Image (spheres, rainbow, N blue to C red):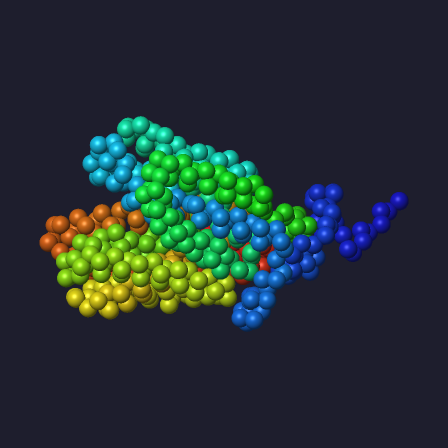
Length: 489
């Protein structure tokens, strides 16, 4: 007796030979499905997503569920107490600790800097764990260890080995529980507002955390001493940030449409390359998009940090006082917050990596202005403000472009690798080479010329970036030609 044909409403995979016989049941749609076409009508050639108007972009925020905003709040709280925010308190701790232990201040500062330099190397592993096991599994225990590690600094004796080991544990846990988690959580919950999410929920939160913690920490040290201050900071992380991860942090569950689309692709033999479901991470690391993006980011970070970390000696040689230089660094930090916000709104409505060109131009213009700054205070402030715009935008554009080029399946791991490269090369290597060049040549002129050339190269690389696929293509990954746009020949 001939079997009847399956109903038209059933998943295509149920009627495909060799496919799984029990299709995924269609569950109630979540807000994520509003942004995806129906899997039964999904075309192989997904048209480009039209650029939304500003009104449509802002009104789209109303469609995210309460769970998304709770997860966003958890990310904000985590960033307020992140290692980046706490780094502003290090300079306040060095003098009282050195006095108590009888150390030179350079020795104490070195003990703090070693864990700061080594900690980012944990990010690729942290990203892999988040991609595999989920955000909560990593964030909750990691945050607890981070809080206990920070508090333990207030209990150590006069031993540099003890201080370095405790700070290593605290920083490794902090980078894993925070930076390994927040980017992916924001990308998953806010798919049409990733850029703004990265800038406001992550970048601006870290900047504000540092701005608040610095004066509060100084007042606390003056009142109760550095040891008790460290204990208070650790307790605050445990009570506030750890609790936020327990009660607020979550990730959206895969929708029925997503599962059915994957099943259809598997049954049809489609590669699913762009969402990372079948291609190993190592394959992505050899693509043109990955290589160009990370070289561009490393050059941009390196140029800015070479100026920022050597600001006192760089501008002191040009006749500026230490007070003026300190104010110029503050201008750069304010500019970075503005850059983060502008980049978030710009990239969310972008169709190409070239929409980042205005910010990359700021890097070149700011570097050239610094090269010409010789005694003019306002020119110094203006140049540092322009560089600040690029600094803030860079922290947003990196994760945004990674998610647009490669999807979210292995996003946390790719973001971890990218951050480690930027921190190691841009922050660890470039400023040292700049100072070494100044010492060998007797000034920063040659270093600024090189910085200008590298800024121009960063801008050129941006024009060489391949187009990134539309969101529908990233989810569907529907044919080999689109996968080939990212994969090496």
